[in-house]
Length: 169
Image: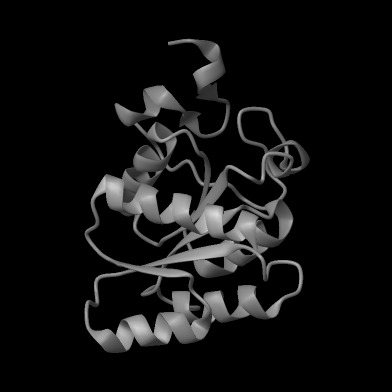
């Protein structure tokens, strides 16, 4: 395996990680493959942050989005996700709504109420399909709502559309 695909702390990241992936979770102030937060934020137009407490969900969404050409960072809970969003200013946050502690609805409200992160697009994901969940996500500030499980094309199309709308605004 090429050395550029192996992170000293997290193991295998990038394209090879589809075969075997430990938790590749970005922590505030950490480095990903030797690249710090300032270098990642320079690519904010293509940077997507996934906030989901499910390891498998994050790995699946990461695969979808990396395959579509996006640069991806992850957070396993909303508290870390909010800190990472403030530090890296991703173009989009893919947000699970149902998480322990601070849930995705509250995290979305916090991101949208902060002047620094207000412009970040949010694609909300939930296993709850009823209209009430969609309404609550919209009221919290989510730009799009997707019901889990979602198809790769569906997720990447919503992320692309969210980015397009943000850039044209």
